Image (tube, rainbow, N blue to C red; front, side, top):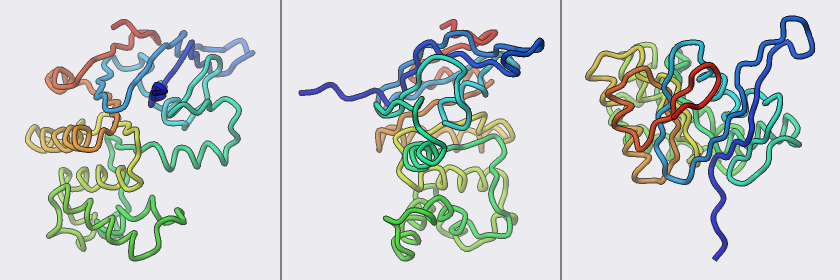
Length: 229
């Protein structure tokens, strides 16, 4: 039986800004990282260490200056912007510190957004998928509420549901609990953990909270653009 490809594989990844100019600054210095299906990995490190840059590259929001990146075994270096957008849309979900919901839309409508451009989701299937995810995050009673009228914890749960709309193999979470109180933060983390365990979703979770990091399967530390653990 052929070995399954890693969900994420970085080899020698570097990222420099203002390359070729006197103010060139290299932020990532030769990152090697492999994540298999179902892994739940915390990323920790001080502010300015390169954590968000690493997440942007893994999430195909930015390109490395050197090195290679593969998502589900597909090398990304030669993909054009359209192909990268398609791969990102179908394989990667995002949850950020700020939920980025459309506050004038309902919770259900926000969760439907990633599916709008996907041909495999006709309107009714889209609505059913969104309703199921809203139910899975415990917000069925709020499905038709405007996102702007929900609490911070509820909004972040909607954001988790939206990130899972396309059933991605990889979920990237950048300080998703950073703006929440302790109870709400624990609820959001528990949601991510549950989807990870029930669906085998690989999770890369950036956090400054050592208690949450300890609850992940493994932890990598980013200091000065290098992985140290």
